[in-house]
Length: 150
Ligand SMILES: [Ca+2]
Ligand SMILES: [Ca+2]
Image (cartoon, rainbow, N blue to C red):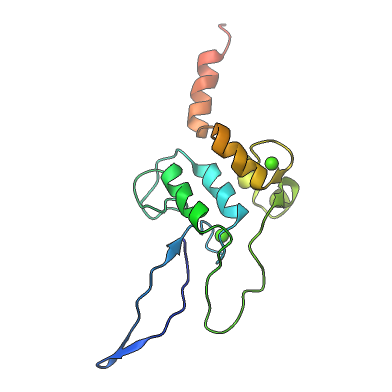
């Protein structure tokens, strides 16, 4: 669901327990936090056609767009609630591109929109000002069109 878990008080309804919960979306990588990694995951798939349940497709339509970024923005730095214990790691504010690659997350390096070697809030600002590179397919089409004749 790519949502943050929410703790709540259950009520007894006959022989069943019931609970009302409004799950907060924006957790692309399902790690219980909405942070800079979720932004990078959004940038990595922005503009692509995906399934309704795909990561970063929070409004469950057919593509990843700025409407989905709104969910990350609204819940940025929020964490899942638990039943009595705390999450050990706080939301990540910034990450080095080198560390992403070392962790096997090199596909998220595209989130470094300003090319300074970090994925951080400066890249969020960059995205707000200039957008992001299009999907790889569009880049390939551009490359074919601009290739010298011969
Ligand atoms: Ca996350
Ligand atoms: Ca950057």
